[in-house]
Length: 100
Ligand SMILES: [Cu+2]
Image (tube, rainbow, N blue to C red; front, side, top):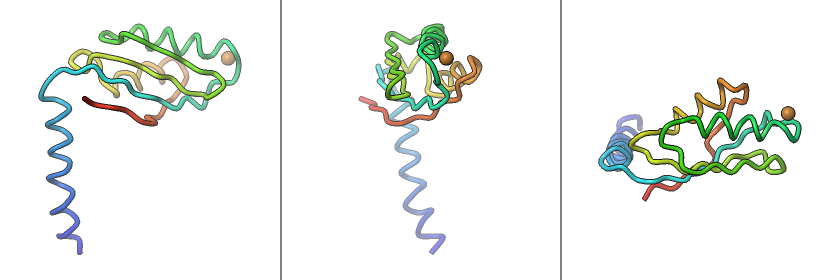
């Protein structure tokens, strides 16, 4: 059973890694930022994300507790964005993203 799983999963991971690093694309990713508890928090989160090189657009919603970030994936990455919000005091999680 284990062998069958790795047989299916490994090529899939390879495909994902390849498609995300082969060429620079503009990506829009939605992050869940559950730690935002007042109206000022989204401003802090937005500033932190805007400081990341390659980020072109940031929309933070306090109501939805999420941040929608558009970035050039040759310069920025999901991990860099996660680091930025974490360092600002708002650990985030990826909600959904599109890579095209
Ligand atoms: Cu706040």
